[in-house]
Length: 183
Image (cartoon, rainbow, N blue to C red; front, side, top):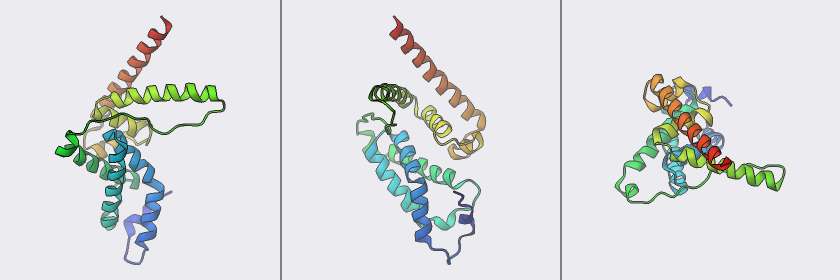
């Protein structure tokens, strides 16, 4: 869905309907990104709510320089990083958990698929935040290098470097695990 009309907002457009449409279209993406940054479901929910409050209050500030998704993810990132900086958050222990479950044809395939998926997600979640973040933006949200560069405020070369290091780390862990299983 294209939200190109956002840059032409006037007082005649129903802001509530537009806001509802944004929440329905991008709510899950905002929550997932917040979760990926914080590793906490409860914080992801709080952050997603805060993001959409900010979006509603600043709906007319969208200028169309980036995609709506990129704009929302930028707000999500900044809000999540603000949460991580608070003294309250630094005192709370983080507990890892897994993202959604995908359905498979048989119970056996489902079990093996979930085990593999959980293992890979656990490896991704163990990456340093900067590598974890570019991995998510690239693989899940399919943002371009340029969009990631704008969202994160770093050069495209930095994005490529972080993504390369993240992939190497995951690959090394998967290879090491495969060797352990074969022995």
